[in-house]
Length: 207
Image (cartoon, rainbow, N blue to C red; front, side, top):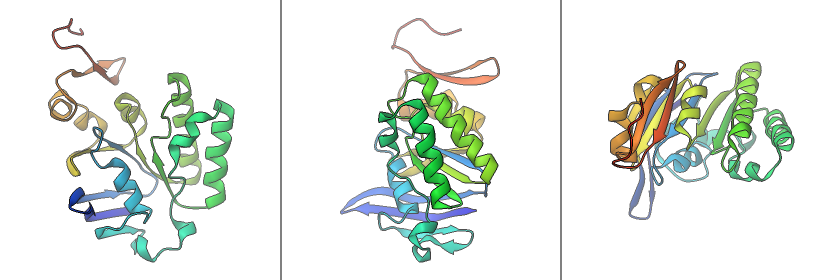
């Protein structure tokens, strides 16, 4: 289990995270969502001890500051995977996860710049790996629809603070997302799946 207790990160006088608390049970997938600059990457970096923080972050009851580097989840450079082909992407993700022998995967936008089909393939691979090895996954995801499909829970950050947390259906709602992403965001159900779309102000409404 990963436990975050009032985690705060500052860059000089700027507060990047403020009082973030969350629990992620072992084997669960937490999707971290939010607008640009919300603190998603900072949260992942603080868990990996790549930036100093106040508050407490523990993995299986042990403070991350006391864990050896090999036990902390990597890779953090998820964006680099976007330059690889689909097959290469799968091999790199799998090889890194197996080599590190860590119980946690921290992924920062692992599907950035991939086309839609490859995004799904990459997330399917991560989910398969998670289930096979009982990994705990924390991933920052821009695509809210895919975040809702793959993550067990979502953590919505806004200006470094927790704006909402819970099952995808409780977070992916118009009244929750609109204040953070703008009035063009709309959530609808399609074949039992929540789909988050953006529309032009004043444009035709979706059924």
